[in-house]
Image (cartoon, rainbow, N blue to C red; front, side, top):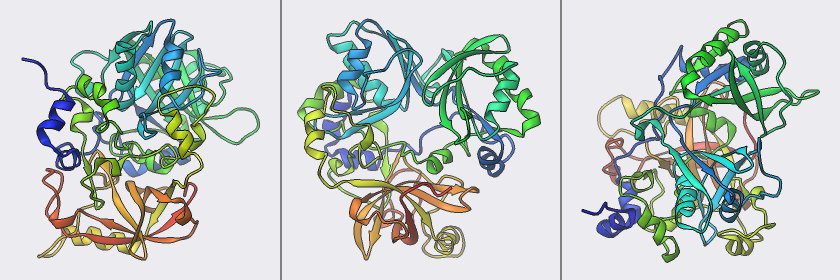
Length: 451
């Protein structure tokens, strides 16, 4: 019997938006220990000392090797690849033929002819599809995230963030680190194990100072590298971070992690939907929140909506280029931060837990996402001006905040908006949704990070 594809599943269900809105999948899975101390101190650590997160399990890694690897990525990415190669990295963004985002992931240039794409499964799957079905001299090696992998992962991946990062890693390495430019990769050793490290944050200090490194190496040596980092970090206040604190890093840093992939409609995307299994991540992702449309394309995003407009480079031909050229000078939504009103937020939390009668939607702590792709209405004077997409509490903010995509003309610092919390008509059939009534929370808009 032939395996059912995503295209088959869509045809069987009928309406894609309804299929995803009622999908049982909850928030994205982080298969790591939930807390090592407590999530409040783990959050505080990336501002005051440093935190170590084990990223070895929750992301899909796909390796692409061959003479055409650069052409493959250049054909698919909105990014420029003019200077890309060994020990380079970038946030790779792919769009469909109409210019809407399929997904993003971090691209590592391991060698000039070998790249690794790491992130949620959508963008890696899209590139693998083209590598396997297109005219490219590229071999594909999949290293699935732990929840889809019955064997040992190929690579360990440890992320250190915080002002003490450089001192900790130098202590573990036994000496000064090589100079690594921002979003470049360096080579050195920890505990005698050759590792590579991506510099993904940089402090504004004389010279080059690391405040964030993503260290990777062969999984067989994961334990000794981790032990060396933890031992070196004791004198600098290093904390190990768990699965409760980890997703809140995206809220503070400004990454919207789960835009709805623009793959579910259009004849041009049908071959990809036929290639994807009905058991794939894309076929089982869920959408939720107070924004509801029966047209899945109303959930699609452009690079500008997600803060990726500066990455669009027309120095090469790629899928979606013509559409993005038409969009470039049009009005866009803008990625912003929303600082939620403390009293309103407390009232929703209290109303979800105490008393009899109708309850508001429960806000989980520290991250209140209950679906793969949250979409809550953002209103000004009862007019829809955008969508809140990723919400939670961090001690560094001192309250609840979220990322949102707001019509550019309303993206004004200090503007007050309202966020509609909860789903209409008591909520969908997702098991992560209890029966509830909707509520509104006031919030103040910020166009830059609020911590």
